[in-house]
Structures are given as C-alpha cells and as structure tokens.
Amino acid sequence: MGKNKLARFEQNLTFKNMVQLPESMAGKWNEFFGNTNGITLELACGHGAYTVGLARLFEERNFIGIDRKGARMWKGAKTALAENLEHAAFMRIQIDHCAEHFAANEIDEIWITFADPQPNKDRKKLTHPMFLERYKQFLKPDGIIHLKTDDDHLYAYTLDLIHEKKYVLLENQNDIYAWSGITDELKIKTYYEQKWLGIGKTIKYLRFQI
Image 1 (cartoon, rainbow, N blue to C red):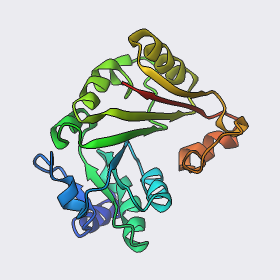
Image 2: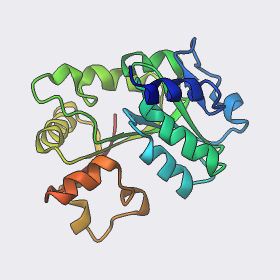
Image 3: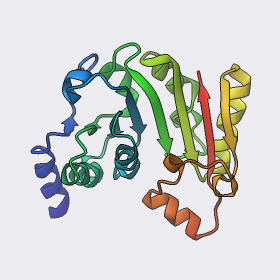
C-alpha cells in the first residue's frame, strides 16, 4: 500500500465528518448532524465531488457520501471540512450493507452518479431490484432516486426496470446538456463526468420513485 494511501487513512481517523466501518448508525443521523433536516445519500461516491457539490447548493439539507474506499473519500471529507460544510458527511461501508445503517423513512433521496455499470453482472448494478429493495427499507414513501450516468446500457437497463416494475418515472433525459430544464444539481461534474464529456459521451439522467 502506498504512503499516500496510508497517510489518508490516518487522516480519515481525525475527520469528524467521516464514519468508518461503524456499528449500525440506523436512526442516529439527525443526532450526528445536530439537526432534523432531510438526508440525501450519494452511493459509490468516490472522491465525494457530488456530495460536496450538493452540500454547497443546499444548506438546509444533509448529505452522506458512501463508498468502500476510504482513500478516495478522503478528498471529499477534507474539502467539506475546509469549506465548513457541516451538513456533509462520509461513511466507509460496503453498499451491500447500507440498509443496516439507516432506519425506516430516514432518507429522502439517493443519488447514483457514474457508478460502475457492471455490464456483465446485473446483480451488481446499483439499480438492480435487489439493491432497490434494500433502499426501500430506509427511503421515505415519496423518496426519490436519481441516476446520472454516461453508460447507455445502465441507463437502458434502469429505464426498462422502471417500466417493468411500474415505478414512478419523474424525469427521463438521454442528454442532460441538451435539455433546457437542466438544474444546478445536475450541472455538478465529477472527475469521471468531465472525462466522459471530454471524449464526446452524452450524460443520461433518470429520476424515479420506487
């Protein structure tokens, strides 16, 4: 393991906005943030650019970035602390175990931004029914899921699933930067989004309820 990774792991232990491999956090998040504001999750948050970006836009909401790689999240956690974004936090866990860390109706929204599309492993897609059933355990009844991706297959797979399961489709855009209704939260660009835009890929977006 490189020295930079080790140094980041050590720093993560000192970050008050970083929760690593914890016992269950279910029902504890309002206490953690010190308020009763709504909570949004970013799954597979990587370096945390979207979590931080959303926190910059919405001071009245709480945001939690989730990933299994602490060395990546270090950047988002450090940025949030430097900017005094006390409503942004990060949790290092396997996403498979996310239902263990949130109580029923504790979460308002989920963002899935440029997750690994898993082209040959449907069960590992973060929009697979197995994952969606887990999210349902802690999403509010009117909770929203956002998918933002460059991947045609993941986009089509999720759209087909929404129709098949009769979920509520709230928005469907196959090229958000050609859409006149694009919102500020959709203009946040992660490292991977900038990379894909640079080679001419279009960015797709789905917003739906389960």
